[in-house]
Length: 565
Image (cartoon, rainbow, N blue to C red; front, side):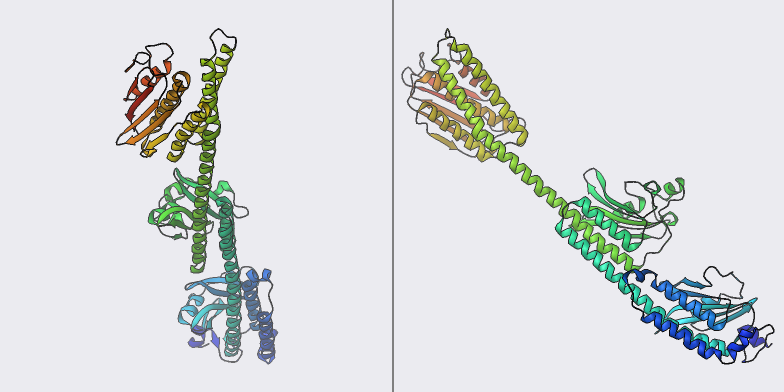
């Protein structure tokens, strides 16, 4: 054997090795042409076969297996392997014939790698004969076919037949790849369209989050997918999906953010790693190793934003050390866009729902003020009128006092209920309406004409100042009903500068002592003393001016802002 034939592994078109079988001789004496036609026809049928949806995922593997089985039969080889380009220039084994592992036999060089790099047929003899044929699609090298024989050199006819078969195999394999990717893209588009539809018709973030992570788990073939929402207290796990057989106890981080998610959020960008424990730039790697080999190794994580503010984070993880392809990353980005919309829609929906609840509570509080509270006040005025005209020795007097006390308790409970319904208080126009209603009810009860004047905006009053003003007005009107025997009264309220003023006048019997009377100095004027104590207690002042037969004027003034407000 010449040195040339030893180095190439390709012999002249004659029998140079002992031990060739009868099948080998027949294959060289005319049968090969028929065999090639049969194998190529089988590949053509496989390429033209219509596929069901369920056939798409294993289609490339099935095509690859047909290729290696056919080439092994055609060349009478001991084994055959097919390598396909999966990521960038990385070759991955797609099929082996016979099914299962071929024993690794030593060669002078990696024939597969050389055939791929040098884009030519490579043969290497060393205990076994290896023939490596690159597969081409246009200008691209899409894979390599490796054929092994335990003995015998490759003839030029072997190489010619292998080259013919490899050219057809390259076309069939590329077609299978395009079909698979086309179907996968269609399913991906359909899944993302359903995800977009879901985010537009529902506002329940938990339901939407579950649909998003379930879809990602299916599309990317991962072990786990998670969606977190940013809250005032940190992050809340909205939804998690796990592949069959992957338990919650296998997760490295549990319900909180893991090191990859935290790094992505801190960097404000998508982060991809094929093995975060082996990534020197990844925080938390030491924690993972202390806890043992973390089941989740490859990860994608992306922060979710609204108006440049983070609102959540989406992540997927896998057990294997895998490199995510660009198409998978784009699918992940699209899902993240839907997740961000879902979170923001849910937030807006919650805010609207809360505003509706608050508005309804305020409406009920206003109704209580305008109905039950005013009715209770009217009942109280009527009871005061009855008590004033009922002698203390009458058997009805203690009963009326009990009813008056119960009425006061009822008014206090109504005020407490209103406070619970409207913790921020009623709107200021409602407070003005309450004052107007108070004066109007008093006029209807007594039959008097009672003009009411409000100067200024009550919005500047603190809750305590509103309470002082309302109770002072109530006491002043009660005193008129009990003591004045008046035919007319007037109320003037002013909100000016940093002070609130109130003036209540009547044309009744006046004060027996004339002029300014010391509040509480005479029997029956306990209400006047209460007014003074209430107003002076908040830093204000009160005076009562009256003459016999000329009515009484009650004037009070106090600061607008109380309670440190």
